[in-house]
Length: 305
Image (cartoon, rainbow, N blue to C red; front, top):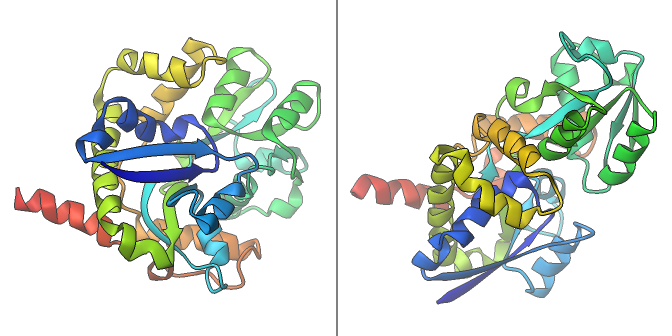
């Protein structure tokens, strides 16, 4: 059995199909032994790729985007999230809340795990015809710290992953005002990438890995929510089951787990948002970042059958 080691930037509900594939033996059926480690701090994924401790990394497309054109050459081959499963949480009643209601407000945007929560939010605000400069963003602190401070009275809104947003809503300390999967369109939120110089060496394993991942994504979209409950409880024992189920139901009903293929237009849009934030000197094109050969081979195999 061949080995494939993953270094991930987090251990989140949006990664559920990967955990499902491991739990149901889908990787093993592809003659793969897959191990995954969540890094803290998340930048350890880059160290793991460098040292060979990991073969592939799982995280935001913005990271390969920022490194494009630098000596660190990274290639993206598939995605796990086809949308951004995040939410804006506010105090009090969220009924009818819109981006314009943030003008003059203070928004907490956790950033110790990466820049995507702020950057994508700013991009959505600009697409709505507003200027993020008309709002005050507090950044660069961890999600737990900002949640604690928000619940203690700091800020008017907070950008959160879907699970944490649901936690705040369930305990009555906030309300989900904007679900990014409903208003944010398509976007490669979480992708798999590797050192470009290892692509040929790992290509066969990547095809088998992505085959199993695609099967898992199809399954988690279609199986009853109750069937996922034991897996959810095993991975996040410290979170109330009902909260996990509500959060999972939101993601299941979205397009987040629709496909392993990255949409070219969605990738280009995300890179444009990064360019607007000056996080990249120029927006990398889809072909600069993504090698589609792995996903292409899956579609060819299906067509042959």
